[in-house]
Image (tube, rainbow over all chains, first blue to last red):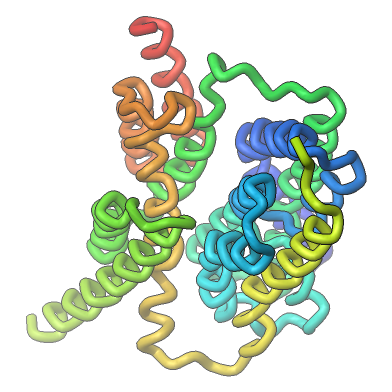
Length: 238
Length: 110
């Protein structure tokens, strides 16, 4: 494999990670602002984003700490918000499990919604990719996304103002994720899984700490798997 | 505001960091290249199309930007993103289509 094809996989990942700047920047700015308002200094705010690197969990922890919740409750709640990361980890394992431990650790640290979503879709679209290409692509998606999380957190903490809500940037999150997923709804099983996720996530939205996402996600994965089995059986019978 | 106790803050930052890393590393790190059973792989194939729609659907129906109020431009923009993405199979086209319909509708209806 020539070096140029690694470079091109890296840049492909980089390009496909770029649109997420519209998600990361406002979200990071907002975290910087909210953390500063809660009394955290620059160093504490930035360290929070570098060490935890998970927006929704950081907001949850910060919110509960300002309410003086017990430390154990803060940790349990924020980790519950992050439980989907374990599902991402499982889903990435068949693709990058053969990489050296240090690379897997690096990928684990940088596993966020954005890098996962880009990578898993790219892996499915490029089944001929080598292990190195898969790792390189992942690091490509991370390059615009994760450093920007740190930088925008810092900028938010420094300037103390978030992006005005009239810009509707809250909606960058749904739009970018729907855009990533829509092209991969190519089989009945994928469509059934996504539809089940939509319905279940609304039904279970009453659950605290994003746990509805987890229940809906699991239900939708089972739906996808069952529809796949059923389709195979029908094909076998025909 | 009393501010957050510094010991609590650092305990949370460090343990939450370790815990989050643990969740992200649990399968990639522990299983590595050992083969997974077919039934599990069959479920894992649908992780992305299951978890990501589950994550965004509540944000579409009850958007944070409107304080949770149902908002027609946002729902239509989400559907536009889905259709453009599905038919063109192009992520960037879907994002542009979704953003254009969101801003267009907010401008027309706002």
